[in-house]
Length: 260
Image (cartoon, rainbow, N blue to C red):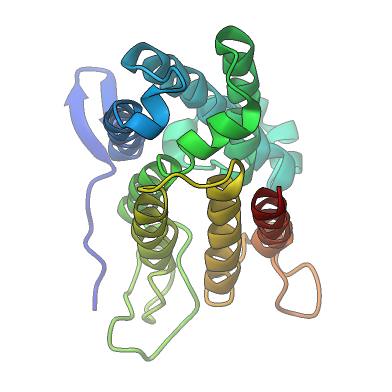
């Protein structure tokens, strides 16, 4: 099966080029804003002061954290030496090169600033935002698919795809695996889990545990970044090194939440 050859540029307006990858971020933020507004009107959140204005502020700070954190994280975790040689490419975000783990750290910074403005506890904010994050992950991974990047290992599975710049053999569409697991499945779990009030810290625990597991599993069929390769034992990737502690932290949050 040949992967769809979609032009990464969605729209050209003279010298201005609007890339699908950037639009995916906008779709993710818009979806998170819509769901956040829906959640803020539910009694379990509105009674604690959540309202549409706070949601808009949270999405704004979160978006800034995602964009800057994801880019800085990719540079530090995955390709530091390359950007030392060509520092101007730091700003080429339309070419991809965004790290989820860096984005997560950036979002935490944004949430901390939001906490200072509103008085919500950091755990409360993380719980409220936990179901919003998979929406951005879903669209972000679809952006990877459009760019035909982060492909998987060679496979003889009937759904294997031939990607440009990846050779003539079919490969696992690992970005679609992540789109469905980290995006759709994790969103479904969190959406239904948070329909009822849960102990503070539980929702973010489910998110961290779910993402850590799903990302670590997909890494087994995803080709590691060429500049890093495998870090140990011929199979451990940077994605697993960064994701496994997330799963452990998720378990800690869940134990803490339900014991308290």
